[in-house]
Length: 96
Image (cartoon, rainbow, N blue to C red; front, side):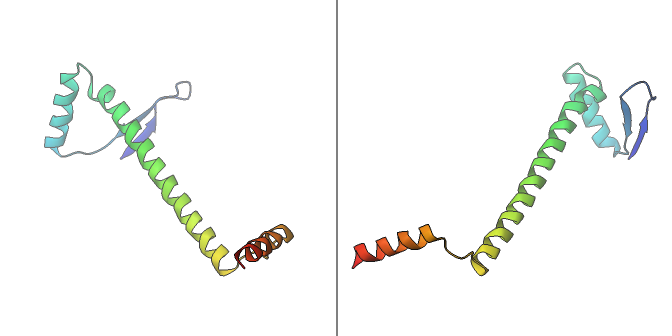
């Protein structure tokens, strides 16, 4: 997939890719049904697909970080605070 800048004064860039002929024809038909160019038709679709992929990647990264933090907390819990110890004593006294 080739990417090239149009010029330094313009913020748009070109994206080129090789496709099987059948897929290119499907894109052209779909764009024509909406009265758009293939480029105009593809931009919002590609933008949404990229956003979805990035959200999924971010979610997986966060989920992994959460799992690591949980396992570390279970394996090496912090020492209980004085308030936590006092609350635990109250619970034990009520249960007795």
